[in-house]
Amino acid sequence: MIATAVEMCPAITPVSHRVRPRGIDRLVSVTGLAMLRFARDHAQVRAQRETIRASSMPSVAEYHELVRQAERLRDEMRAQAAYYHQMR
Image (cartoon, rainbow, N blue to C red; front, side, top):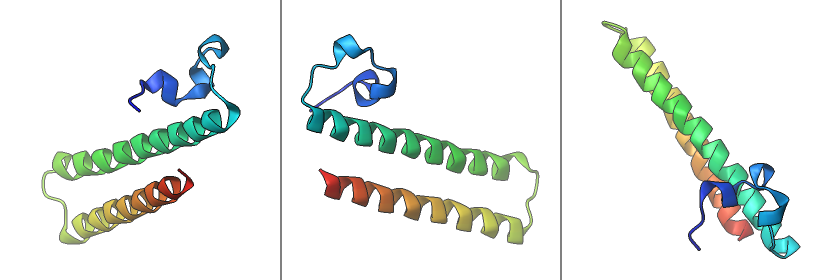
């Protein structure tokens, strides 16, 4: 099923556009939340990478800390994706 962002996030979808059975609506709602969380986490990782690029010469320790944070976020996103995939 290919859906637009509006269909994937029922919180901003007008009620008139939501003509789905309740179970499907819940699945779409959970999937929409997962997509929003993924987008937020992805933006955080991108911001961290920009922080590394913006500083002239980050110390090795700062760089490794940012890499660890990015890896931690990536692992959390994978865990969330696996969880939501199981719900389907």
